Every structure is written in C-alpha cells, then in structure tokens.
Image (tube, helix red, strand yellow):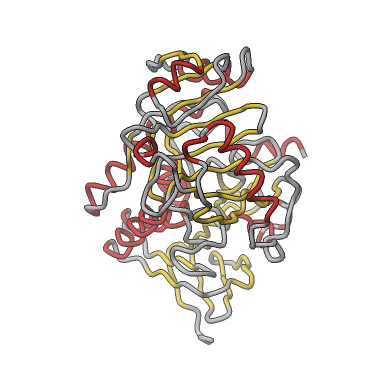
Length: 382
C-alpha cells in the first residue's frame, strides 16, 4: 500500500454505467480525476451488464423524467461522435398492458406533457405490425418511434476511453475500504492505496450503503434475472422488426429487446415478490424457478421467441424508497456527491447523469431537470 496519499481533484467510487460517465465528464472539465472500481471494467456483478439497456422518451415513472431522457439521448450521440463507437440502436418502443391499466395512463401522460408523438394500438395491431409479439387482442399499447437500446458494456468502455483521453486515472480490482473527511477534503483508503481529493463521487450501486450507512433506510438492493432464448422465427426478433418493450400483464411485468450481440431474444421479468438482498451474499446462479418464470412469460406473449435457453444472468437492482433516483450532494458532507437508487431504469440516463455529477462537483448545482430526484427529499422526510 502507498504510504503517501496520492492527491486528485476528485475521486469516483464505482466505475459502472454512471461512475464511468462521471469520471469522463469530470476529466473533460479539466479536473485530475481518479476512478476506483472494485471489480473489472466493465463487470457483471452489479446492474450495468447484459449487452443492452432500454432508452426511451416514454417515461411512465414520471413525466418530469422526459427532459432528462432527451438530454441523455444528446449525450449518447455526443459520446458516439467523440469515440467513434456505435452505442444506440433505435427500434421504437412498445408499452403494453391489459385494458384500462393505470400504467398506460402514466405512459400517455408522460408523452402528452411534452407533446411527443405516439400511436395507440390494440394488441392485435401490435401483433400484425411486429409479428414477434403475440399480445392478447384486448390489450392496449402505446408505440413511440424514438425508443431503442444502448449497448451497455460498450457504453462503459466508451466513457472509460474518453476519460483516459482526457487524462483520468482509473484503477480496477481495487476495493475501497473507507473514506473520511479531512480538513482539506476527502481521504479514501483502499486495499492498495491511500488517496486524497477535494471531492468524492459515490456511484457504488448496491454497495452505496456500505459507504453511507444512513442511506440503508432509503435503498434496497434486489436480485433480478435476465434471460436469452433462441427465437423459433429469428427474423421476427431482429432490431428492424422488433421494438423494445415494457409490458404489464397476467404473466407479470417484463421488458425486452430484439436479438443483439449475443445469441437469443433478451428479456426480464420482475420477480413476483422482490425482497432486499445483501450484494455480498446474493445468490448469483440463476435457478430453475427463474428459468420457468421467464419461459412462461415468453411463451405467453412472444411464443416465436421462446425456443431453447441460451443464457440466464442475475443482476442487482437497487430500489429507492419512492422509486425515484437519489442525486446530489450529501446534506451533511458537502464534498460528497451521490448517485444511487436507480430502481432498474438508471442506465438509460447514465450519459447525462455523469454531467449532472460533474455539475455538482464543479458548480454545486445543475441546470438539468433532476428536481424529482434530489436526495434532500428523503432526509427531509426522515
């Protein structure tokens, strides 16, 4: 271990989807930045793996997410131009549910509030236009043409490459043990070194509570599974024929993608009764029950995609106390800036959230639309 602390302007703990973007954005502003990642870059231990993550302007979580989604699209395109990597694939997005579902009311409200064009379709109309789908005829759906997916591992690599080009230092396979405030900033101790900086950014996902114990009452890491099944009609699940989807139905709530990068039609189904888990002790091996849950969903709504299993993978989703993000500077530690609690839909925003975190470090404020996500709200309620 180094005996003399290395000094930086800012340290980022966690170099996953959001942490990698933060390292890049800070370095691009001229700061001397260190990123510390416990696992590999990229890795499969958190929630930033699995080839694809949905991007969409449709935001049923809250219409206030839409401006942030628009900004994220701009930042993804900027990153593509800067690195020469193709990151976004536009397929359109389908949000579908049983008749009169409040979920679709929220879908429409988010689009109407920002005058975004969309189509309302019956289940039958969806199936006719996109034959990979087999929705019940009485289901209702909203199709929005701007949705699609981002290549999540490639996006992390792109942010890291851009960060390196801007002068950042990133160290993988280095576990942070603790951090403390000093009279001159922040000190971070890892299993390999001691570092100091003016500011600390925590983008540690399910491990956030390890570094900020007061956040444990606001966050709940949960175990989720992703599945890849070989389509029986592969042409129906190509990106040009198969929009990404979010579906609420009798067989549960799920989301999914066309075939991309690896064999199989990828989708996930929310566990029937998600419970909090310790990220250190989580069972990372998918089970027969996990496979059965996913296969039943696919056989019901996407039967042409329900061929042999190609892959199953677990991931950690860190739910926040109210389902919205926790972003901002810690009210008791003004030099500590936090991004946590993304509740399963944070990666799509990561390109812009890196800029948001850089704003907090360099300006102590941001002009991006994050009012719904400011972490002060949970401390005020507490």
